Image 1 (cartoon, rainbow, N blue to C red):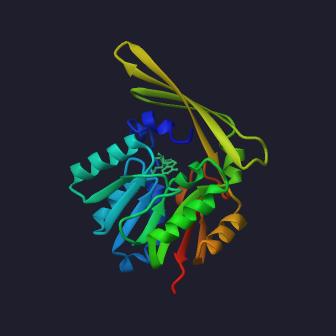
Image 2: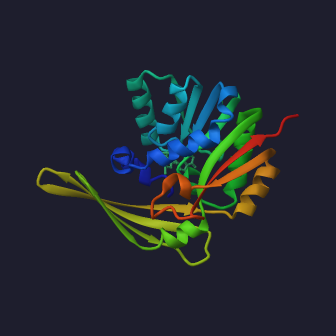
Image 3: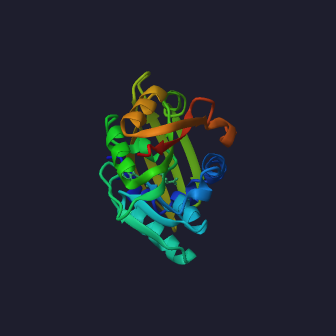
Length: 250
Ligand SMILES: C[S@@+](CC[C@H](N)C(=O)[O-])C[C@H]1O[C@@H](n2cnc3c(N)ncnc32)[C@H](O)[C@@H]1O
C-alpha cells in the first residue's frame, strides 16, 4: 500500500514538491562535520534521486535504493543526464543488501515512516547497520506523532499546471499511524485525467527510535528538530526530527 502511490506520483514528484531547500540546509548541518571522512554512501528510499545525486556530485561512490520501480527509473535517468555514477538498486529498505559496506546511509523526507508496521523500524535499522562499515553513519528524518495530529488531519489542495491534487488525511488522536487519500487531476488537452491513491505512514516516539538504534548497534546518537531548517507553518517544532547515529566500532 505504502509504495503504490509512487507508481504515479514519481512522474510529478519533483514538479509538485518544492521543498528540497530545507533538507539541503539540514544535510549541511548534520552531515557537514562527518563528510570529510566519507567516501561512499547510499540513499535509502531515494525517490527521484535528489539526495543521491547530491552525494554523488560531492564525489562519493553512491548507491540509491527504492522499492518503487518508477522512482528507480527516475533516479537512473536523472543520474545519466547529470553524468553522475549512481548505482540504483530496487529493494525494500526492510531487507536490502549492498554489494559492499558504505561510510554513510541517508534516508530523507520521512521515507522511513513509509514502512507498513511500527515494528519494521528494527528491521530497517538491522539492514542499515549491516550495510555500514563500523564507524559509518546513518542520517534520517521522521515525521512525529505531532505532525500526524497537526498536518495529517485535514484537507489540502495543491495546484500546479498540469496537476491539481486534493489530499484528505485522517489520523486518530494518539495513533502511531496516519493515512492520506490523494485525488489527482492531470490536464490532458481539454480533459482532466483523474487518479486516486492512498499513502500510509507510521511513527515512533523519540525514546523508541533511540532504543531501537541502540539495539541495532548504533551509538553517538544525535537529533535536531526540523523547524529551524524549514521555517514554514507546516513544520512547527516537534513535527519532524532529523537523526544521526554512528554504527558502533569494534
Ligand atoms: C516521501 S518519498 C521521499 C523520497 C526521497 N527520499 C526524497 O527525499 O525526495 C518516500 C520514498 O520512499 C520509498 N519507499 C517507501 N517504502 C519503501 C520501502 N519499504 N523500501 C524502500 N523504499 C521505500 C517510496 O517509493 C518513495 O520514493
